[in-house]
Amino acid sequence: MPPRAKPKPKSDRPVTSSSTRFTRFLWFPLLPLEIRLIIYKFAAHHPRLIRARWTHIADETDYSNVYELSNFVKPGLLEACRESRGVALKSFDKVPHHVLVSGKRFCERDLWVNFAVDTFYFTNFSDKHGFLSALRKIAKYNGVDKGAKEKGIRMIAWDRKELWRLLVPRLIHNFEAPLLYKIVPEHTALREIAVVVKPNEKYVGYPKPHEYELRELDKPYAELKLSRTAYDPADIIPKALDCSFPIAKADKEQFERWKEAHPEWKKPIFTYKKVLKK
View: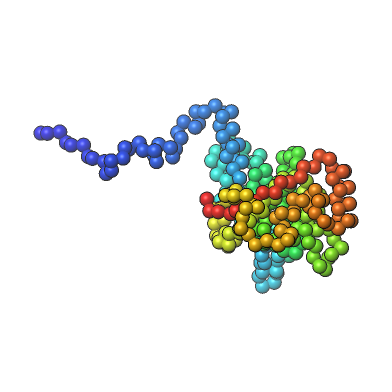
């Protein structure tokens, strides 16, 4: 009886193709502990974009104004194993999904944030005091019981069309300092303010915001063909922190005194970015 012929593969591709060889690394548990911890820490510091959208929530008896924070994917390190969870808990903090501006908390769900690398992108704006209140509440959740040397928000992003709010006081509160001079003294950990040059309208209401990320522009901001005014906010805000932009004398003097009293303060950088799907 002739030997049975071996079945031919359904395609000419070898069984051990690149698509199957690199999807699983079975020898990871055999790596030295020091290397595994380095890999876990590297994975925990992958930057993400946290969407902060001002909205309203209501039921039959209550009405609340909130900033709704969205990035629904829970970090896999928290559930992979005991080692990875230990590293993740040193990097991530729980932040309420709904940050109250006024009213009561409706949603009990939290999200995990790594303040060191995650960017809070404020897609729209409440009133000035509501925004400052929400920013303070978000910052309080960083470094809880971790003994962090520098607590608070490190990176925020704004739409270019909203940037004027940082420098122009509200007309009914024109005796107050511009918003920028309120944010900086209160949030000394702030290291970067990203200017979203071309807002992505799909991202604002997209049900899976974790599928988007911030990316560098293809060309310098100055070379972009954008409709601009004589004082384009994205141009003048960096100058404002040096007080080289014409601002009210009282605001300038107060901010200069604050900088002299805090010589360790590092001025945040301004970057120009776009929001794209991964």
